[in-house]
Image (cartoon, rainbow, N blue to C red; front, side, top):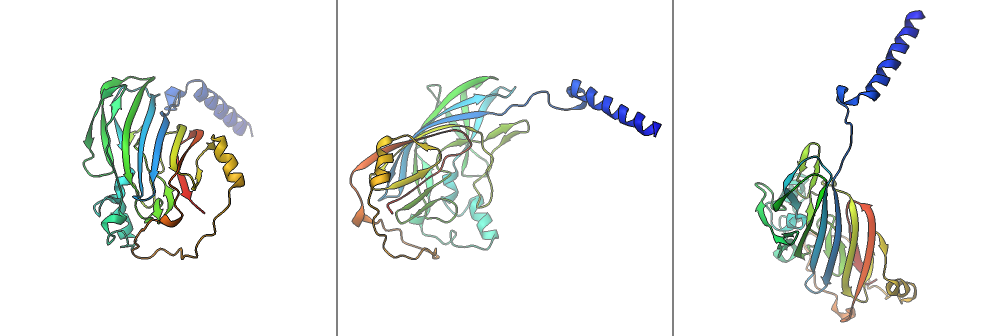
Amino acid sequence: MAKLISLRKSLFLFLCFCNLFPAVFGQPDSYWQQQVNYKIDVTLNDVQHTLDGYVKMDYVNNSPDTLRFIWIHLWANAYKNDKTAFTDQVLENGSTRFYFSNTEDRGYINRLDFRVNGSSATTEDHPRHQDIIKLVLPQPLPPHASARIETPFHVKLPYVFSRGGHIANTYQVTQWFPKPAVYDRKGWHPMPYLDQGEFYDEFGNYEVQITLPEDYVVAATGELQTEKEKQWLKTRRVPDPEPRKRKLPATKKTTPDTKTASVKTKTILFRQDNVHDFAWFADRT
């Protein structure tokens, strides 16, 4: 019994010592993670099934390291052709639907022109993946400093082969804007878009302004800020949807539903703090 009491005392003293001197035993004495705050303006074209946007990112370097480049995810390019990690994965899982899809049903992101703190910045392709690029910073970003990164972008939304895109004029807008990869104690984590995966992102605050035809209902990350839109949602008349099958065929022509389309547009604003992504969905019914 005396030996057991002595052992317990020794263990207690050892744990106290570890808490007082964590660095000696390899425990981190501080924790950090990067932060990226976004302001995005985007417009939906529901005839061409495209997005035209402009993103401003405030990248906060909370790490102890000086950064000279930032890996950027361009995940919409996963749907660009049949030579992406996404294509490889769905083929391995037994689906050939995307592999044999038509060009008009695929998607991409382009028209990028990056600026960092007002200066033009160059990019380099990832050696393996079309949906990742390296943004070379015009000036090194030291610890505890921030940089304003901005660029226009254009997205062709694909048919819904995975977690985002459109079926006719029903839109599921996910993984849609240029987005920095995570940088943590283990370094950079650039990863391609997959049908199963890639949910490791930096947290931040989002302010997203969406312009689209006025008869669409939008559900999105965060809280709707536009009072006029809130009142419209309460009082609007819901159109009767035409009967249609929701089963996804092997291929599908995506003809716009123009007979009920509104030519007028509206701009609505959403805000949300402390999240790692922003998605939105739009449909008339």
